[in-house]
Image (cartoon, rainbow, N blue to C red; front, side):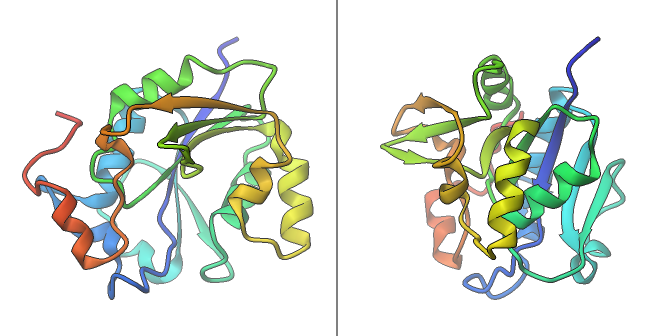
Length: 198
């Protein structure tokens, strides 16, 4: 039986620094969130899930995906991960990707999946000694720790990772995959015409 790997786009953020919901900004002819979704789709991950809130859901294009709608707004990615893992008990691994990464691409997803191993609870990219918890794989075995932290009202993905068996996958410093858009000036790091999903 083939292992189930879900693909998740986290798109419930506040975009407070950006000033409006950044996941709908256009990049290379597509809304920003779509680059993450396409990268997951191209690797045939299933189910595909967009985690967002009711205020934002209507702004997405009609997508053939499952929806996880936050009941409490802006609780952060750790709460979203816990909610998703609880809602999909038959899924073993969850590939979590933020919705504000214009250069997210299918090749990156494909590479990360090759590191799946029973010895780990999470597989996380590392670039310039910075981990990238919002472009990472989490195994169902992480659920109990995620639940403990959410019950303590902890929000940090780094606190979760500190309690898991993590495989860190190094990437070159100049790899553009992890560029994300938090503020309007972050667009200066990108060429708005190019996507890595071509």
